[in-house]
Length: 355
View 1 (cartoon, rainbow, N blue to C red):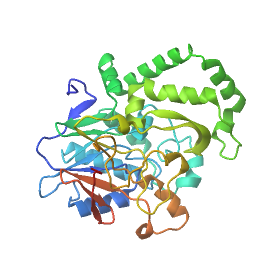
View 2: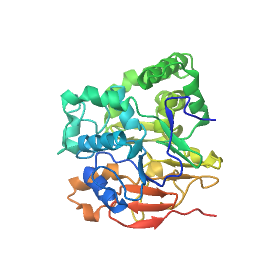
View 3: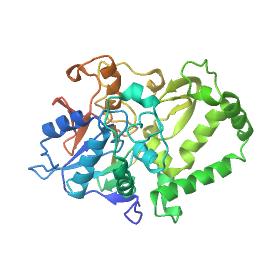
View 4: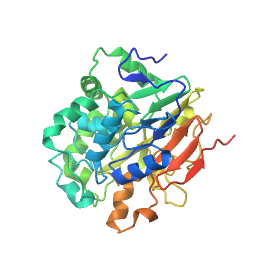
């Protein structure tokens, strides 16, 4: 059903063993460690012909997003690796600065206090980076495997075929414009505008005693599923009555475990969701997301695996002078078809299904 008729969906090589790596988030040292334990050389070649697959979110928050991006771009050009767009790459493409992107955007001085020291991206190279990222797909697939950053959503995938825009950025803005037009006609529009006007900066103030804002909540809820590029790279949401602050703003929706309704026989590998490893605490707003242990497959038929183990939070450990050897945040790869989980510390585990 979903073939390469659409430039946003591309094939993976058939009959090839793969190593699918979770969100890297600028953690260059951890990526080098993981590649070493997986058996790849400095250019991304493997002596047994295995190929690397990245699930997106290569950048932001970590100390060296430029090194990670430059290495992956070269490995993809050499056909040693494949990658898709995550929500953080999408933010770069649509010029939308977010928490942890101050290594690239010049208008986020607040990021320096939280995430620095880190490497900034050369202004002279940004146009080339934009051109490269704009050519990356949203989905990689073959007969036995699907790779998407956040959510496999047939309705959203079908929307990609409905739009005549072949540019990823233009298609994003096409659907955003459609959403804003549609939202103006909902019962929540006036309430949303009132809340935005009244609160304004408080929506980004962690110390403000925030209460539930139904207008903003329904705006975020409807926006999460309306734009297919946003839905595939950020997932869909459900409303929570208890506001929480994360990544620079107050939230009134939480991520929805779409995999509970996934029943296709083809396996899906995702990142994005900040899964916790054994022995690490789970944030309150994520407690309903993962009921399974971290090594387990997800969903009704146990056909979805999240390979993101929160390496994007390692900056917090650095602020507390916690050494990498003692880190509770891991960069991981799922070896396919072996179903082995390899961590950047060299330890590996079997992925498991409950049945």
